[in-house]
Image (cartoon, rainbow, N blue to C red):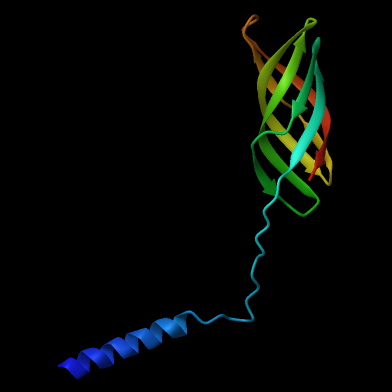
Length: 123
Protein backbone atom coordinates (compact mmCIF):
# COMPACT_ATOMS: atom_id res chain seq x y z
CA UNK A 1 0.00 0.00 0.00
CA UNK A 2 2.88 2.36 0.83
CA UNK A 3 4.39 1.82 -2.64
CA UNK A 4 1.03 2.49 -4.30
CA UNK A 5 0.71 5.84 -2.50
CA UNK A 6 4.28 6.79 -3.47
CA UNK A 7 3.63 5.81 -7.09
CA UNK A 8 0.40 7.82 -7.15
CA UNK A 9 2.18 10.87 -5.65
CA UNK A 10 4.96 10.62 -8.24
CA UNK A 11 2.46 10.41 -11.10
CA UNK A 12 0.46 13.39 -9.85
CA UNK A 13 3.59 15.47 -9.28
CA UNK A 14 4.84 14.67 -12.78
CA UNK A 15 1.45 15.59 -14.21
CA UNK A 16 1.51 18.97 -12.41
CA UNK A 17 5.03 19.70 -13.57
CA UNK A 18 4.04 18.94 -17.15
CA UNK A 19 1.04 21.28 -16.85
CA UNK A 20 3.35 24.17 -15.97
CA UNK A 21 5.35 24.03 -19.20
CA UNK A 22 5.14 27.02 -21.51
CA UNK A 23 3.84 26.99 -25.05
CA UNK A 24 6.22 29.05 -27.19
CA UNK A 25 3.72 29.38 -30.04
CA UNK A 26 1.25 31.29 -27.84
CA UNK A 27 1.79 35.05 -27.81
CA UNK A 28 1.80 36.66 -24.37
CA UNK A 29 0.55 40.15 -23.62
CA UNK A 30 3.08 42.43 -21.95
CA UNK A 31 2.05 44.16 -18.77
CA UNK A 32 2.65 47.89 -18.76
CA UNK A 33 2.39 50.06 -15.68
CA UNK A 34 2.74 53.82 -15.67
CA UNK A 35 1.29 57.14 -14.70
CA UNK A 36 -0.74 59.25 -17.07
CA UNK A 37 -1.80 62.82 -16.53
CA UNK A 38 -4.05 65.24 -18.39
CA UNK A 39 -4.57 68.97 -18.17
CA UNK A 40 -7.36 70.71 -20.05
CA UNK A 41 -9.81 73.55 -20.24
CA UNK A 42 -13.51 73.37 -21.08
CA UNK A 43 -16.17 75.99 -21.81
CA UNK A 44 -19.92 76.08 -21.34
CA UNK A 45 -22.80 78.53 -20.85
CA UNK A 46 -21.14 81.40 -18.88
CA UNK A 47 -18.75 78.78 -17.47
CA UNK A 48 -15.04 78.01 -17.73
CA UNK A 49 -13.45 74.94 -16.13
CA UNK A 50 -9.77 74.12 -15.69
CA UNK A 51 -9.60 70.33 -15.56
CA UNK A 52 -7.03 67.72 -14.65
CA UNK A 53 -7.22 64.04 -15.45
CA UNK A 54 -8.88 61.92 -12.81
CA UNK A 55 -9.78 58.28 -12.63
CA UNK A 56 -11.33 56.83 -15.76
CA UNK A 57 -12.57 53.58 -17.21
CA UNK A 58 -10.85 53.33 -20.59
CA UNK A 59 -11.62 51.26 -23.68
CA UNK A 60 -8.50 51.17 -25.86
CA UNK A 61 -9.03 50.55 -29.58
CA UNK A 62 -5.38 51.00 -30.57
CA UNK A 63 -2.23 52.52 -29.14
CA UNK A 64 -3.30 55.92 -30.48
CA UNK A 65 -7.09 55.96 -29.92
CA UNK A 66 -9.24 55.29 -26.84
CA UNK A 67 -12.51 56.41 -25.25
CA UNK A 68 -13.29 56.60 -21.55
CA UNK A 69 -15.83 57.53 -18.91
CA UNK A 70 -13.90 59.85 -16.63
CA UNK A 71 -14.02 61.98 -13.51
CA UNK A 72 -12.53 65.47 -13.83
CA UNK A 73 -11.31 67.27 -10.70
CA UNK A 74 -11.73 70.89 -11.79
CA UNK A 75 -11.71 74.52 -10.85
CA UNK A 76 -15.10 75.74 -12.11
CA UNK A 77 -15.67 79.44 -12.76
CA UNK A 78 -19.39 80.31 -12.93
CA UNK A 79 -20.52 83.97 -13.08
CA UNK A 80 -17.04 85.15 -12.06
CA UNK A 81 -16.83 82.96 -8.92
CA UNK A 82 -14.37 80.06 -8.74
CA UNK A 83 -15.12 76.87 -6.85
CA UNK A 84 -13.65 73.37 -6.92
CA UNK A 85 -15.95 70.77 -8.50
CA UNK A 86 -15.78 67.20 -9.68
CA UNK A 87 -17.09 66.73 -13.20
CA UNK A 88 -18.03 63.49 -14.90
CA UNK A 89 -18.35 62.70 -18.57
CA UNK A 90 -16.87 61.10 -21.67
CA UNK A 91 -13.29 61.50 -22.77
CA UNK A 92 -11.77 60.66 -26.16
CA UNK A 93 -7.98 60.32 -26.50
CA UNK A 94 -6.07 60.50 -29.76
CA UNK A 95 -2.33 60.22 -29.21
CA UNK A 96 -1.59 63.02 -26.69
CA UNK A 97 -4.68 65.12 -27.41
CA UNK A 98 -7.90 64.69 -25.44
CA UNK A 99 -11.47 65.80 -26.20
CA UNK A 100 -13.48 66.12 -22.98
CA UNK A 101 -17.17 66.76 -22.23
CA UNK A 102 -17.47 67.09 -18.44
CA UNK A 103 -20.75 67.85 -16.65
CA UNK A 104 -20.82 69.62 -13.28
CA UNK A 105 -23.68 69.81 -10.79
CA UNK A 106 -24.24 73.38 -9.64
CA UNK A 107 -25.88 73.52 -6.19
CA UNK A 108 -27.08 77.12 -6.34
CA UNK A 109 -29.07 76.70 -9.56
CA UNK A 110 -29.81 73.00 -8.88
CA UNK A 111 -28.90 72.01 -12.46
CA UNK A 112 -26.17 70.29 -14.44
CA UNK A 113 -23.72 72.49 -16.36
CA UNK A 114 -22.24 70.84 -19.48
CA UNK A 115 -18.92 72.00 -20.88
CA UNK A 116 -16.80 70.97 -23.88
CA UNK A 117 -13.05 71.29 -24.09
CA UNK A 118 -9.65 69.96 -25.04
CA UNK A 119 -6.68 68.75 -23.09
CA UNK A 120 -3.17 67.46 -23.43
CA UNK A 121 -2.05 64.10 -22.08
CA UNK A 122 1.43 63.62 -20.69
CA UNK A 123 3.24 60.51 -19.46
